[in-house]
Image 1 (cartoon, rainbow over the protein chains, first blue to last red):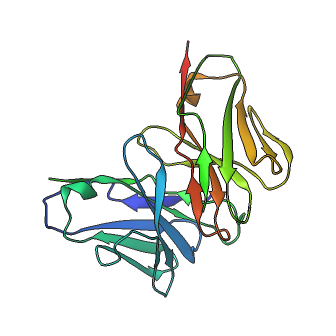
Image 2 (tube, each protein chain N blue to C red; image 1 turned 120 degrees about the vertical axis):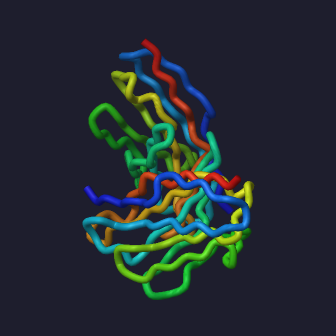
Image 3 (cartoon, each protein chain N blue to C red; image 1 turned 30 degrees about the vertical axis):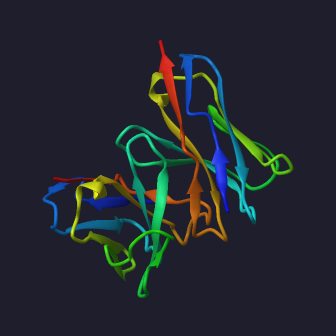
Length: 117
Length: 110
């Protein structure tokens, strides 16, 4: 099956700094990737849809200037949390849809645990 | 808008059968999906129903009734490794936006 990786798996940063999270599709080209956020024991909340070669589409309530998304190639999307604060601490998960697979199926990365101190 | 309701927790014993229900409200229905997530892990796709009826995949089955806006995930012959969170999800406005329910934590005991 299709594989999506994320790096890093865990990151601790100080308040006010920026953190970049990478999401890669390893064995397929993903024109569309998705970024989710998940708080402990809660659901996944879609933050934005990342489209290769164009601007990301952000969900209502998500600050586009704080969560910068870049989808520069068909296999890589990045999420940069700028000026991070403790309330940004969360589990960030990306997913992608394989254009050669089922439209309804998303492949998720293993997630990145961000802790802001 | 979209909303999904599912039980927060379910407990069962090994070898038993458990059913996790999901009711949804959505404008424009594109199907009901189910995902499994172990603690700290990635959600993995289990099933998708676009039409009414039962879909079976090994020990797992999923059912959909569009007229009732209702579906369920049926897990048979439960194993300890099935202890995880299970999310139902619907698409909103096409296949680009997946809305997840709050999740059901399944605990399987010996």
